[in-house]
Amino acid sequence: MEIIAYITIPLVLIIIFLVVKLILEKKSRKDIESQLLQVMFNHDKVHLHDELLTPNELRFYHDLQKKFGEKYQVLPLVSLSALFDIKEDQKDLYDQHVNIRKFYFDFVLSTKREFKPFMVIELNDNTKRFSKRRERDAYFSTIFKSGNIKFFSCDSNYITYDHYMDEIEKILHIPSSISDKT
Image (cartoon, rainbow, N blue to C red; front, side, top):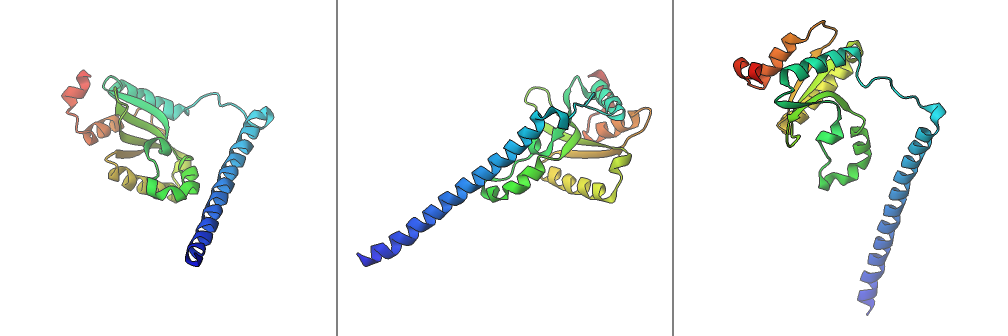
């Protein structure tokens, strides 16, 4: 009987500890969500953007749409968390998952019907020329390669982006004669 008590008591204590820890983590997440909602509903602390894309991004979007829009979906402002998820065995990295949700990409090309992403495009303006940004792009490039998603990063502030459309076409391995018909 004593052996069962020696096993049962620590087991019960471990279970109680884990349940308390889970409850506290859940409460912490709810508190963060509550604070965010409070800020959002306090209208004097937020303002709505007039436009979703900068003028350069909008021009680039229209060029992408014109060149690839009939064959593919051109999706602007796609979050990293929409493309990747933390693996089940890594759920203890919840805090990092919150950070993953902060990253957005300028454009994603996906299939029309299934919305399966196959290319991420970053349009780099003056604010994105810092070394940390280049490091970030290199890091994401390796992540996308592991997920079989192509990554293309280019500079903005051009009057026309036709030369980039040709580069994207080459990366996608689309013969010009086919893409011009689509």
